[in-house]
Image: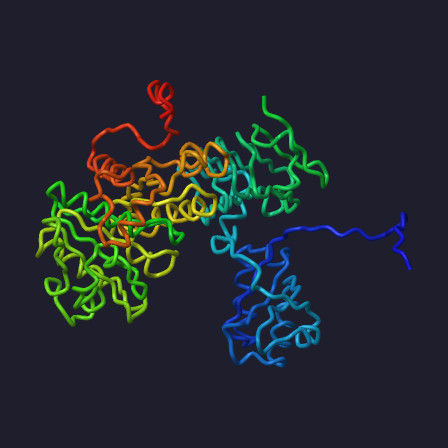
Amino acid sequence: MTAVVDENTILEFKGRMLMMTVLQLNDLDPGQLHQQVSQKLDEAAQWLQEAPVVIDVANYVDADPVSLLAAVDTLRGLGVNLVALARNERLDAETAAMLGLGSISLLGGREVSRRNDSNGKQEESNEAEPLETLVVDQPVRSGQQVYSRGDMIVLAQVSTGAELLAEGNIHVYSNLRGRALAGVRGNSKARIFCQQLNAELVSIAGHYRVAEDLPEQHRNQPVHLSLDGEAMQFTALK
Amino acid sequence: MTKIVVVTSGKGGVGKTTTSAALATGLALRGFKTTVIDFDVGLRNLDLIMGCERRVVYDLVNVINGDANIKQALIKDKRVDNLFILPASQTRDKDALTQEGVETVLDALRDDLQMDYIICDSPAGIEKGALMAAYFADEAVVVTNPEVSSVRDSDRIIGILASKTRHAEQGNGDIPARLLLTRYSPERVEKGEMLSVEDVQEILAIELLGVVPESQAVLNASNAGNPVILDTDSDAGQAYADAVARFLGDELPHRFVTLNKKGLFGRLFGG
């Protein structure tokens, strides 16, 4: 049988990078858990109820399905948006399924700082405050990673193998040879500006292009990247 | 004031040990009291390049472990005054290096033996041996070959130097790092088979200390256990001598960078 391309396909596969919060539990005592999580919620850590949360009990050897079930119930009762259980030697996909959770490996992921971790109370009135802008005036070398909670301005070159992550816009007033990921927390209005586009990868709000897919006419040129729906727009900077 | 210099690269086989030997010998020839230390514990090579492999009694790890004192372990060079070699241990691995131990050795070289320069020959890689060689450095020489993988590894090392040295950890900023481009062949650059000096400098964006041409003299020198800088007739020897002069602050034009064009006489008489 030959493959037929169905024009009425209802499927489309897309790559998307999303940030998940990993909730690391060092004990599963429901009482303590309820008390500590509600305290967090009282401190206006609403993100716990919005962001997708993965439970990780790698540090708690005594985690068995029964105590996990109680912990999951407690967390759900508090409105935490649980999506998955981190796999380890003792907890497989079957355990996760029993708890009504997906199973996920944390091995491939990478840690980034949580925006509103501890100072939850201040975050409430934070919206009016300008986001912090990180200015980098040294070359960002291969293997280095720079993260900004707001915009990022880089005044030196970004080497192949280096990575820029910003929740806002990224400006590179030099040669961008590494990776640049703007809007890493989902801001699709974020943009990337650079003097010379030679990036390994560019991404805005999880929609990414690898070097191979960059438009030839913008290579090594000053360019401005934005997101139009799900399509990345390249505009030459004059 | 003792200066500690790390010779590093990330990638192996680019000429770190050859450079360490040449730099140390060149500094000693200028009258500076210099020790060159092999940090490549387990893969000892510097003693061969320096031609003192048959005089090794104690090594760096022995000194760190207190089995020998620094004076017993140092090998005095027979050709050049003021030059000392501290070999690596061949029977141990890099875990034998501890930060406190390395600091004790460097302190002894500085305070008790009044060295002007301590050259640390780093092992390849970015693991413990390389980190220990770089940690106490005041200055770095980054050895790179004109090819993409070597350049990328050097870039990584420069980044690590910016954060993983004592200077950086104490908030004193980056240590100065300068580039030494080795195994350079202007012919192959012209044919497009090799990155040019300009290409490499554009990627790494650090000051150029010197360009050492690909040369049979380097291999001959290694085989003979004679630092190539002592071969003053060779192009590589001269290039290293220039690099040492620049290291000490002289301003010299870079030689061996462009293809030798035949002069008028050469062309007239068929060279």
